[in-house]
Each structure stands twice: as structure tokens, then as C-alpha cells.
Image (cartoon, rainbow, N blue to C red):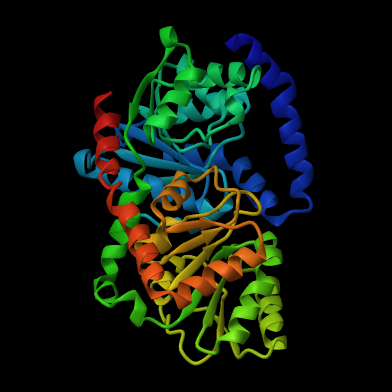
Length: 428
């Protein structure tokens, strides 16, 4: 069946996807930026890799979809570097948010993932000659997997998650994904439920090595939090009564904005930190006008180092890369994406001891599911629910503290995955 699906993918599916992406790039800056980046990937690799004596003996190729997904990769790369300091680490990204914003001294070469045409993948792999290819979470590309398999390159995916009711188990669709996942050498799932769902996709006779190793993102969030020891010694109740709305999309704003404004008007002690997912100057200025029109003192935070938020009721953030630090100055968090593409990183507010609210689209986030189960997270579907949850948490000290500690406890109970993944990558 692999030949059947590979033929269909290369003749119909991917050419259509490429066509839609090409047309879309004419109207969407982010798509255009990624498209241009992929056009230069092969040249970038030729410049970075030498066929002479200076060529590294061992190359590990990591792939992450975006900036957020790299937080799962970061502790694994760091651990691998400690064990094999002379190896070369190449990291590819699909999204410009990853390529532009990820800064990691352990990365030797950073590229956009090449277009998923057979010829472009073959050229890239011929240049790099990686010992192993490691995917994070979910952003896998069929030709890349199939070509690597036929070139006998060991390919792994870690932090693999298969949500309950995933379409990958539907008839027909399952056959396609079976042809892809069976081409992996090893797959490391987050939990036992993911393991069992994956078993339904792959055939036992041709199954890759499958292990349950957890999610390294927990380790990275904990490591970042250790940089805020002083803040963590202060009770969350002693912080300003601030709501942190992080990674907010326009779809989130439509649902929650009235509730947030009502809460600010009802209680003058409440302040707000508003952090857009993409802080374009136009959106930031629009947000400032919105809150000023409601009578709130408002300013824009554009510094990545001066993070004091005192003095105004509303702060709108106009830079990226500081949200994980800003959570430590709040008491309750709303994390965006749950009304659009899927909820973003809920672990950063959790480690900062914040009860976390998010929209209904959280199937992409096992961390969000864990927070709900522990009592530290809340899925909301309306502005009324946002208002009721936040108002209750601010007024009930005992329930607030239970949710706060439950959120942080989810992180501590899931540590150690990065070490397990590194050991398995080297050993398997």
C-alpha cells in the first residue's frame, strides 16, 4: 500500500498543497516568508556542509514545526550535545516563527524544511547524510519519511500524541498514515493511551520500535522556571491581581474580550497583560485603542529586558519571546489558540502557578488534558464561562490555591522525559 499512497501523494495531494501554498503566499506574509526560505534550503545546506576533511562524522537532524514545538526539542538537543559533543546538530523548521526566533547555541545549522518533493528531499539528504532524523510531536512529511527509509536512515519521532477520536484511525486515512508511520525506525509516545492508538494504526508485523517516554517539554519548562527562583519563593497570592492573556488570536479575542473588560470594570484591583500571538504593529495599536476607548490606562511593552508592569491597568506586549517570564507577574492565565488552530503552550503558566483557561480546541495538547484532569486547567467555550471562572477564582482563595498547586504539580509529575528520549535516540 505504500507504493499506492506514495503515488497518490506525489501526483495529486502534494502538488495541490504546493499550488494552494504558492497562491496563498501572494496574500499572506508568513506563508510568503516560509516559501522563500524553502527556495534557499538546498543552497544553505551546500554552504553549511563540506565533503572534505572538515565534514562532521555524525549529524543529527531534528525537525520542529515552530518556535513552540522547539521547546520539546531544546532539552533533547542539549542532552545529546553533552553525550556527543563532536556531533553536528541540524534543526529544520516549517514555520518562520521557529526559523526566525529560535536561538540555541547547541544548533550548528538552522534551515527551513525543504519542499516535500522527492527530488528536493533526496538532494537534501544526500548533502547532509544524517546519522539519524528526529521529528518532534506531529509535523511529519511523507516523502521525507519514505525517502529516508529507502536510504536506510534511522528516523524517529518523539512526544508523539494521538488524540482520542483522531482522524488517523478513520478507514482510508488510517491506511495512509500506516504507510508513513511504519517507515519510522522508532516512535516514542507521550503516554500509554497514545501507545495504544498508535498500535491500531501500524501493523504488528511491520511495526517500528514503540516506547512510552513522555514529553520533554515539561523538562524545558521546569528548567526555564528555575531561572526565577526569587519569584517562586513569593506566594502567588502576593502578586498583583493580574490576568495574563497569552498567545491570543483574533478568534480568542472575539469570545473573551467582553468578559475581560467586564471583570476590569467591576474590580479596579484587576489588571491585564494582553499578549498577541503575532504582535504586528497594526494589531498592537488596535488593541491599545480598544482598551483606551474603554477608559483603561494602557501602554505597550516593547522591551525584552525591562519587564516591570506597574503603573497602568492594561499592558499590551509588542515583542515575542518573553511570555514565559511574564506569566510570573500574574495570578490567572488565559492561553490562546483554542478557538483557532489549537491551544498553545499551557505549561509555562502552569509552572508559574497560574490556573489556566483555554478554548475547546485542545486535542493537540495532552498537557491541557492533564491540567483539566488535575484541576489546574479549564476549557471554556464562551465569554460567560471566562467571566464565571475568573471571578470565582479571584473570590475563592481556597479554590484558587487548589487550582494553582494542581497546575504546577502536573509539571513536576512529568519530569525526566528528555533524558529518556536522549538515551533512546542513541541506543535504539
